[in-house]
Amino acid sequence: MRQPLRKSFYHAFMGIVATIKKERNIKIHLGFMMAVILCGLYFQLTKTEWLICMVLFGLVISLELVNTAIEAVVDLASPDYHELAKLAKDAAAGAVLVSAIASAIIGLSIFIPHLFSRL
Image 1: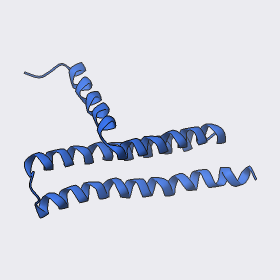
Image 2 (image 1 turned 90 degrees about the vertical axis):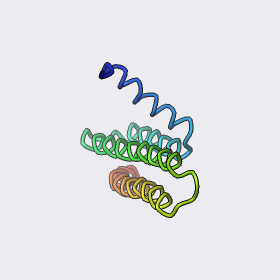
Image 3 (image 1 turned 90 degrees about the horizontal axis):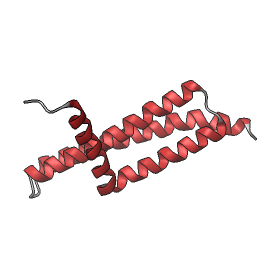
Image 4 (image 1 turned 120 degrees about the vertical axis):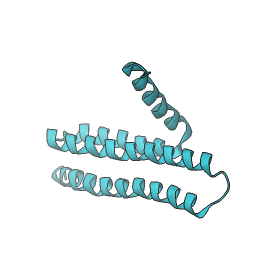
C-alpha cells in the first residue's frame, strides 16, 4: 500500500533536516547560499539573475543530499574498505564539487559587474 503524499513530503523534509544536522559540507553550502542571497538583495539582482541563483542553489544542495545518501548506502553495504566503495563515494563528492565550482563561476559572472558598477 502506498503511503499518503504528505507522509512522503514529511520523510523528504526529515532527510533534509537530518543531512543538515549531520553533514558539515551542506552547512557550508547553506552559508554560501545565505551570503549570495544577502549580496543579491544588496545589489538588487534582476529576476533572471535571481532565477539563475535559485537553480544553482537547488543544484548544489540537491547533489549534496544525493552525495550524503550515496555515502550512507555505501557505508551500510560495505563497512570495510573496498576500492569500489571508495570510487562511489569519491565520485559522488566529485559531482558536488563540480556543481559548486560551476556555481561559483556563474555567480561571479553575475556579481562582478554589479560590484564594478558601484565603484
